[in-house]
Image: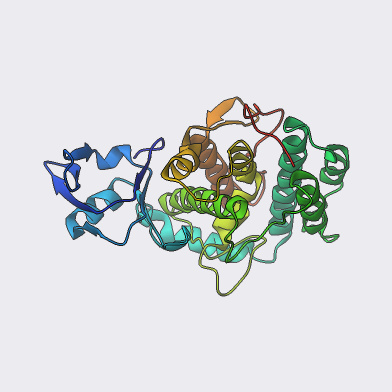
Length: 306
């Protein structure tokens, strides 16, 4: 199972299996090949892509995720590898038992504190104002976040991170900044969802996110402390009006980002796997904490705040 490559296809292509390799045929270009085991996420970003069932089956068996996007660069569907079948039943019972428990409140508090900590670190790395307030907030987060410091921190963070004439738009965004943020978050979300599926966890059963319309509540929980990777990448870009292929490749390239965990620096996919593994341990024994990013992290050269 791969943990280090995101393959982005955004032109007319025919994808099939050839001698165990994924074969990519494109008009007037030489065929390209990739081993399914070398692919973490396959992003299909063009309406004229054809892929065989055999190719999909082999990608899933290798642990790869397939992400579909629309013309606005937003995700429309995910194919998850279902390789954790031997533990599905026990994992599901553990997740159901966690819901509403003191352990769930504790874990959510850890995620919120880590997210606020990454926000503070981003402001410092990008030489923006407001980091000290977020650092103090991160230290005050209680289990379950009853004071809703997550929302307070987000409002403060975006106000200091973005120029005065820009705002964070989650859905339906058309402006260059938010289009890139949303695309990057979609890539990150798919990576988290892939690790959850590999571990046999149900992505719909969240810790802090509980929307009945969201099949990826748990992915949204665990990606919170990792959003900073997308934000630093986007703030380091030249934001042209068109969302160029080079921009999408740069955002897909977050797979190579380095994240500091308590033990050492990891590549992003490995860090996500460590976080998911720590959740599995917490579910199994009812105690223990999550393995989450710590700081200082390495800043992104050329990035700057508004």
